[in-house]
View 1 (cartoon, rainbow, N blue to C red):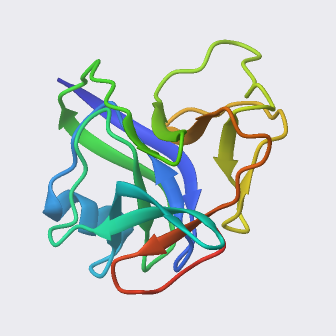
View 2 (view 1 turned 120 degrees about the vertical axis):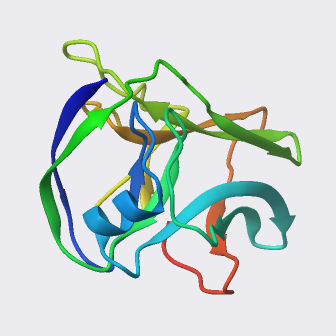
Length: 169
């Protein structure tokens, strides 16, 4: 076990991709992100008339498994939180779904090599404005990227949440 200190900013009400090399139970998740934090898992990929839909389901118990990517919506500002006596894991659990000859995987970025960048083609990242972009950027750890594999020349995708609330993701 070890002590972990995360130096990352989380604003209340925004969506963030997260993936940690340790688990966070419900109590810890609420202590860090607020008592009404929402944690979403990527549950399916479906096709609708306007394109593909990445479907996310809100967890009834907000907790985070080690090495697994999630979307987190804090209900308070969080920056620079420390956790004591966590078990560091080398788990790497991407989540992938396929529909209409396209596979979209949500992959954890747990460690980043020096000067690592997204490839600007198939790897999308979630920006502060809650939109997905695929231009080449420096990767940052403890996040997730969306890896799109398709034989189509153009793919439109949006996110939907189990409460029937959509965002610009």
